[in-house]
Length: 202
Image: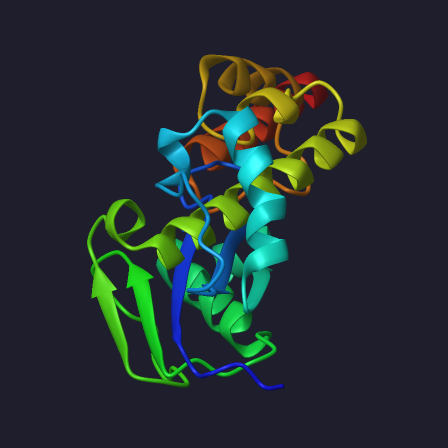
């Protein structure tokens, strides 16, 4: 039987990293199957997120995860790429929501239902909390796969964020094909590698 039309929570993971996609999730929770412990994914340990993510997928009325690639981030900018990932997640839901709650202070255009942006909504709205957990765990798993494909950068540890270890790897290896070339530290590392190459050829 078709479930009732309910509110969908939407959140993203990976706006700040220097590498990898930005990921968004959309979740319609089932009021009859509550999930204790939902909160902002950043407030949870990795073990807690990994425990909650399968519960969300099992108990939600509908959920979807989508992303925008590093190339799309470079072409559109991170804000618009985040909105793109959100609209893709909403479009992939098995059931259309009656209302949409999005974490943050701005909304994508042309959403499929009335929507409201909620600052720190991942702390106050369980559906947004659930979306934040699915987006985060999905992206973290991807970064571990990228780590195997691009050894030396430490993606499985820092998940593409701008840590000292990541900066050192960038200066040593230069950007790889999942780096966001429009981000200043990556752009600087690429320019430094190009300059060093020219000096060697001179």
